[in-house]
Image 1 (cartoon, rainbow, N blue to C red):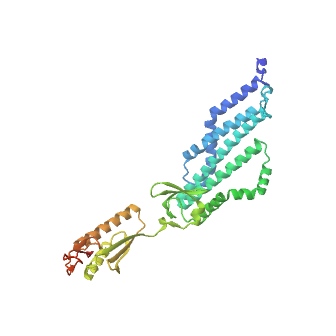
Image 2: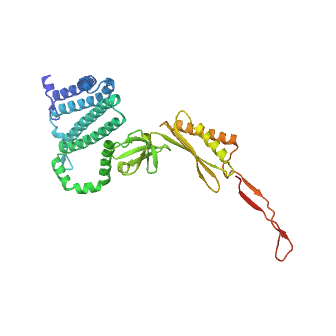
Image 3: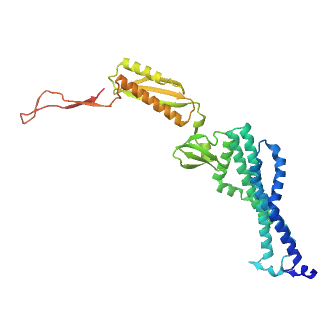
Length: 383
């Protein structure tokens, strides 16, 4: 039995393989329990950061990455105790197979570790979001999402540098130093991306708008769904999804419709010239009464102008910053009430009908004949 344990297979005794396999199987079998235990310990430590934190949501967020990192780390550490078999040590394009295997192991460990850190960043964002809900506002949530995405980008860059340094034996310090020499070229090539990144910081600190606001920028109108590091995503009125570079959002004139204090409704009437001053006064007084509604905060109606073809009556009214559907309902009701008032008074819109009249003219003798020619003329629009 002792000889069996010491039997060498691929440069390692059998007992070493058995110990490694047992260790890996044990960790795989217990990873759920161990990872949940570690997650609970972390939760106890960070619970002070915010009250009302959902424990189950936190466990669902980090238990998986902790378990995978634990299995990867223990497996790689156990396999490291074995001697690399000389029979499998061959060259692949002048690179030792042992070096390739070691590099892959390091990459797997770093990737699993970075994934765990990314999940922890999501957890911190969850804590801060709970705080913002209790004592902050939508703009605080906007900043949290921005910082979360920024930290994830930084962790991704750090992970790549770690892989280059540990797996491929690349001197990272020399790369960082060379960036100083190539900085001008990189800045020129990534000019727009850098401008958009800087513009994203301007948006988050200046806070001209936030996610959920209704904006009008250039010819685009819609609701902001997300503000990213490079661009802002807007859901337009036609339900299309538009991506606008952050630099354009900063440089352009942005009309934040959500921050308006009132909604304005307009009514423009062109009445016929036959409308008397008494009828106009009665109509304007009636419109003013119609505009006295619950959600109409102030209004005005007046005779705006007198032209050669119509009398122009303007009515403007302002409501509270209600929803678009509520505003459309009020606007429709106002238009119907004014139309009913005009029908009751017998008033019509200028140019709504035209009279054609036959006018007798002085008979004219057509040259070369004795025929008499009459005249027909079209009158101006009925007023």
